[in-house]
Length: 374
Image (cartoon, rainbow, N blue to C red; front, side, top):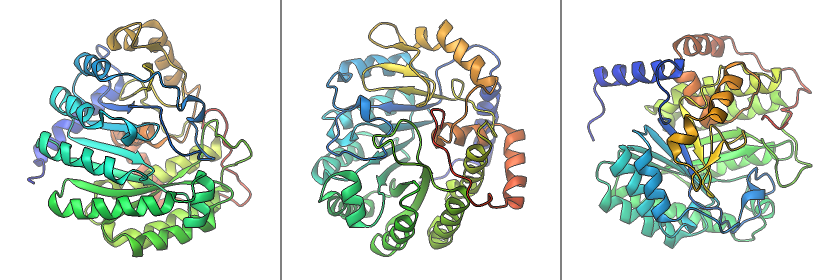
């Protein structure tokens, strides 16, 4: 696959950086997260979406078709759930956004439980979407097998995830566009587990090329779970980074990752925006029931069953929320919103590059307080 030319990359970066400034007319977001269903088979203790699960009021294929027609070009599509592969129209929904909105990169967090459903969807996409450049399955894993299974409320959860990994590893031999990542959520209870998981995955999963670490956030299912102490989180990140360094070579995200981790820990430490957020300008979210918001943290600003996406996105509630975010009246450690906020704001990018080189670990006993805006 021929990589984009240097000139096209500069043009893309300039265009998105201009969008990040917020000048000109309001357009649909180029980075979109879509919760394509609310159905999930697990009961994860750290889930921030638990109150919205299994409501059975999800958008149908025709409603997704209408949404796609109302959007503009999409740079990166993040598909979430529920467990996304329990959406029976998964492949058809992906094809809509690839064909109608020019999506070339897709990321899907998955618990990995449904090997057959995942393979069927992947093979359908392989055949119907030759334009697609990158499709990343991100396994959500919280520790070594026994810990993970207890945390997720299913005795076979880890085993099933590994079965799905094995299938995807074979599929990757057929189509190099398909990549495999893992994502783990750090809490005050599982840092040692995540260090052990890091080693386990590196040895067990040779086709996996990234293991990301997030900080617990939102209104989690188990309210007693707290965020990790930030110095310990930093140590875990540095360890994970060292283990996976060879496989990370050449991956653009590996360049941004240290800046993202710096921004997350500094934000959690200061409890304010360290990076000016571009949610509502570069990023948007559509929930499974049709609710629209600028990010996963904020409340909905409208619903697709009552108004079109553009009516919602350009409406007074969205305008006020963008003003509030621009005034730094909220903060969070949500990676999907933070990533473009770093990359497509030149001043922020430069500051982050310098800051990472000088980055010192937070002092001990500084917790990643998981409040409503984290």
